[in-house]
Length: 131
Image (cartoon, rainbow, N blue to C red; front, side):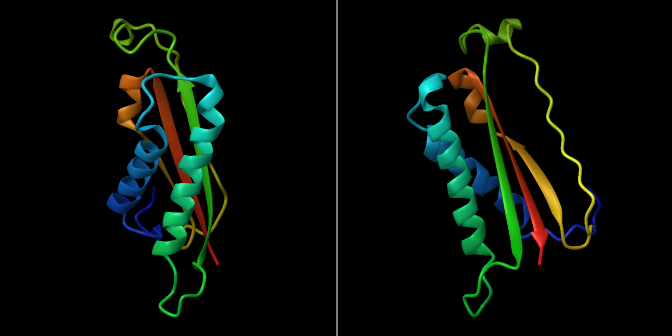
């Protein structure tokens, strides 16, 4: 990412927001549960969006000067968390590209380390478009 990218909040704060959203959504989960994935993704996405909107409001309380897009992907490991160290995991690669204004727009990706012990991978991407 070019250094001219205008992040809506500092990257360390983006990481804190994403970690908090994942922990809130999956904190009590012990393993992948297909029937819960849609709810987990919705909670992650909505928590991140609410945090970003709140943190980027103008001083007058107007809406954020950015449009946000949040994507959350949850992938089940092929084996239990204790067996995953032996290599029985699914491969996954995610990428994004865009044509936009590098001075106002950008994207940031995050993989939640806490998901590994629960037998899954969680990858979140946040995209913003300056208005």
